[in-house]
Image: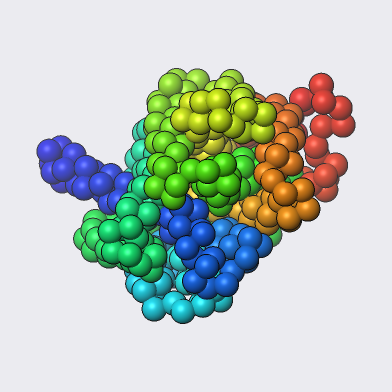
Length: 414
């Protein structure tokens, strides 16, 4: 293949990666601005509404563990195309939902499709762009977060123009269908020859895998809570659906910008931790502002929090891929990190809903996430580049909990 043709093929593949990533969050971020309308028409109360985020997150976690198996048995390309078909179906079926449980069922379909894509696409990126993993994963993460902005902004707009919240959710089938078509045209053929088949059990015996799960879960727990409750939080403060949706869109733009820029800035350094800590510091500021001064500068709080969440998301992916040189094995590690991480991340929105029912507000929920960020700051200290090869070279005999620091000041390597 000529250099010009190769560049053209890579550009088309990058476009496909970006468009696929754009589909992985709108079905969740579109819920918040329409929460009151959905609740009134389906009978879902606050904890029931939390299921529209919790169920997809649980499935993203549970089915991410199937990523290595799908890669071995079915192949990444075919699995991703099947997952994109589920995204089309799940969004389209929202046109016909008549009660809350049907809506939760569509959320399950969408979560399953998203889980498969997230488990397998990073491995393709590692294989096709081995010298530009940081930049391409930054693009992937930025478009994923940009999809969140798209859902938060367009869903209430479509619902308002049509007078039907069903259309405010179902329009997403169009971009999913476009992603399916482009993916079918450009995703590379599966190439597993010469790669050792991946046994999930081998990975789960390594304490580093559990550490990555914990870091990823704590960060994305903040994301899932913000997606579910930032808009209802401000609606309780008197904001309209469109205005609160715009705030969620601002947050998602901050996420996308940070997810694109932070990996670019960090690409020359093997140690990603200073950038991760910067992103975590932004989260501290953002959650503190929501808890103590929500009406002070909401757009600024949204940008800060979004930048912190987006930067952590992208950089944690890159750290996982940095651990192993083989693309399939690195992709499997990324899938397992997401598996445990999203299982953790699924729970906080429901906990925040329970705290809201008991306390009458979201203050306790924002404090909960300040605590989670504090734990993440401590855990990230162990992600030294020198520990990557050692931590993945042989199964650890420690339990996941024994491998954590005994004191806040202890950073050690495995």
